[in-house]
Length: 280
Image: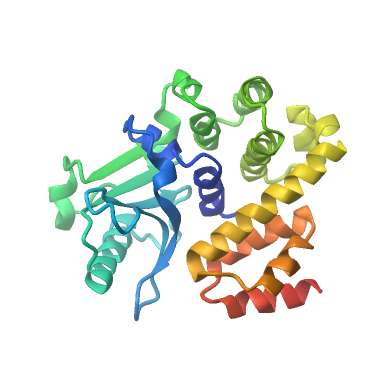
């Protein structure tokens, strides 16, 4: 499973999480639209970009990149990341300033800034986050931070932390849909962390069996998934035709999850049409 999709879901469910992660106490996550952006005339696609409203020229654009594995080709992530950023600035010439955030699940995955970009070594424009180095109490600040911290946590301590988060979700959140969205996030993180485990084994590990099989949970998950997918699609491709919305609303919870992951690779609404046809 691509970790990009996990981070994407976290930022969708808890939009303030990125700002909390970088130490920005201004709760403005809902002001930004989060998505991916294709750079014109290249093969680059920026996986995470937070763009403020058109009228908020005083707010910066945030470019976000995640690294959860060592590149097999030996590529240094900084070359690609800065390449994507500068091509975006050239193509779109935004009025806003910009900042960059690199999130590593482990500090050992950071290859170091190349000398060609040495001016960013101590530059506040670039911020690097190592999830495995965050203090344990860091995740207590918010549910979003708690879920994100799970990604970089050692497998032997993650289950207990996951169960603690699930208890917090039930105690702190009253809206059923929001509760279920966080539960789904935690389960997705554990699917990534324990790829050899079945869904049933992960549910047992977290004590999710009874909760996930309730009718309330199933209905809320389907509704939440529909809303999230439609929001992602409209953010990337504009207004979604009513007939296409109706098709998406008929999808099962599993299909909605699959579509949410698949659309990260889509470049137009025609890709959505093709995907829906394969599900018919």
